[in-house]
Image (cartoon, rainbow, N blue to C red; front, side, top):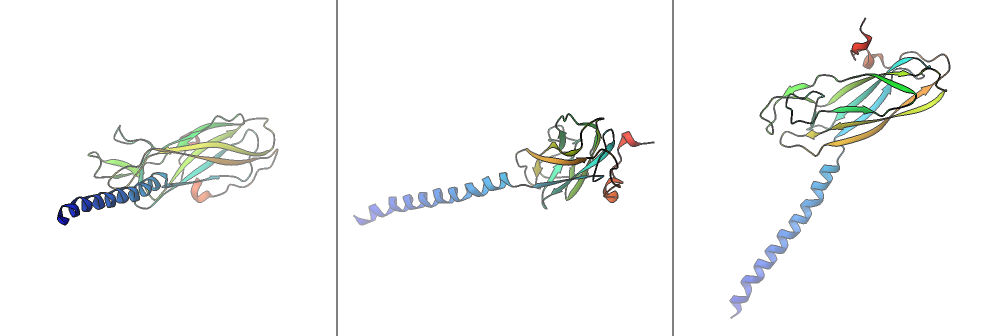
Length: 192
């Protein structure tokens, strides 16, 4: 008689182990979706800006190793482009946003060749401080939207909000900063 009882119990234990394993997996997946795969840092080409002056901002993207994001003009229409949005600000006009060209690469999840940013990429923003704005610190609200993928699959699209800090002064202004970064951003509006 004893043998008949042993079997169902083993199935129940197995089911319990399976359930525990599934629960253990769930938090790991959630953590991956939350992970900041892309870090953003912004720089301004001068430490202080005068009203009426045009100046540059750089948005430095750092993509975690093993991941990539699409560039701003993906070759495949189904891929989500990386795009930078600067919120309307009463004190500044956005003259131009520059996106570098990505690196061409192939990944198993897409049949087409893709153009991606991996490692580090620098986006440029050309801004104009409006005439007559009062001196003081300003924060331009910006957001980077992107979709990060590894070689096998893609994470859900994300939007990362950040601020670009600008200090406005009546007169003076400072020397150009970070020429090693800004000299490499070919803004079309500044071409002679």
